[in-house]
Length: 237
Ligand code: ADP
Image (cartoon, rainbow, N blue to C red; front, top):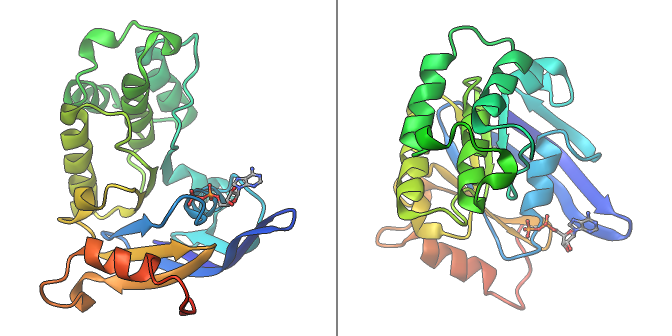
């Protein structure tokens, strides 16, 4: 479970996240939508403990800066950041050692198979395409079986097979009780699995929409445009 309480983040004078509060329960997928510059990546990096901010974030009750929180938190950044001189296999081994995992090889093997990486295990990070790097980044995030997983634009640059597998992976992690946040511009990619959608605009939550409260016949895309393109109206709190 993720609890974001009154999170405010400034980059000097720029207010990138303005008093954000958000709860993501275990077994639920919260989708972060919003135009470029709305503050989605800043919120994600703050939740992951990568930025200083005002307010608080807890991960299953642990402050997000603690080792207890980091142990159960997985993060797939928008830009994969692999080690250029480690092979794919070494990335997974490194994660397994860092998280002190036992009996991880079988799961690693399943993930590599799932993402078509079996024949790439001996390739170095720097030798992989952007899409392959993204897949390795996902495998590394998932290997420790985190209870909370945050994906920032996970589908960008992936081939159709990769997109299908990430979508299936997200659905199965949700089934297993993971609390998930996915930031995406591909609204239709999450239509099937979302529980809550947080639409951000100018650093604020412009709308928090639960699946059950979506008007009949309305899609997530309709809701998104009705919120984001209402130019002159005040952003609701
Ligand atoms: P999104 O992910 O929704 O596109 P971001 O969180 O990346 O939005 O950015 C929110 C705002 O913060 C934007 O105005 C962006 O220019 C600004 N911003 C993001 N990162 C930095 C940074 N490191 N330094 C200064 N401003 C930043």
